[in-house]
Length: 167
Image (cartoon, rainbow, N blue to C red):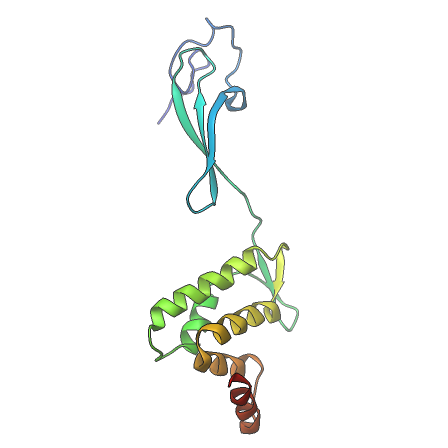
């Protein structure tokens, strides 16, 4: 564990009093290089220590997103859980070819859309529509299964109509 010493720079352990620096502040360091990480979730910055030692170090900045909530049909608000989307898609794709790969791909795509929704709360109807759209493009049988549960279909004629629209 690092000890806090007001006389030494926390980055390079040089004496900061000799350099005339009262307090160390990371925002006062010099940024030499800044780039987005491969997956685009963070910014990587190369910095040079302010105490004059020339010591280089790296910081990572991550975007803070407030915790998402889901508004259910009955008005109840619950925390967003991406595992529930994964389970729903997995059930819809049960027994299909490349089930695990498709499930992972579709649930990640839907989660991305929800994160980019731009609001702190997402209605379950919107989540269901995202899942339906992704399933319709990637697996027709999964689409029919999910549609039946999501739209609460009870009439066999309604299922026939759904299947007919896919052709």
